Image 1 (cartoon, rainbow, N blue to C red):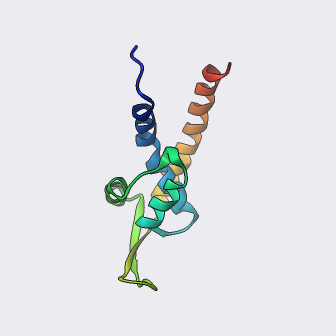
Image 2: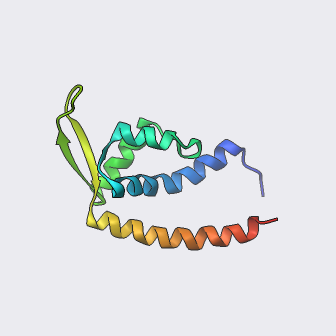
Length: 112
């Protein structure tokens, strides 16, 4: 087994979970893309740029997980706001259960 550099490992972990983190944020309230980027950037391990978030949101929208609505902005052009659909909420709830089971299993091996 080769050892991956820490950056590669974090990238792989982020790739599998950032979509669900975005869905969790949207489950709390609607947001626009730049707001999501800022919230993820507040946590170094989850930092994702606009080049990651916009395609992710597009996929989530195509899959029926999120809905969008254009709203006027108090500063500048209208913004596209994203919100979680019922299908997205159901998917997120399934992931939460799977994540708990998965993280508990990994933690048993990571303990000293």
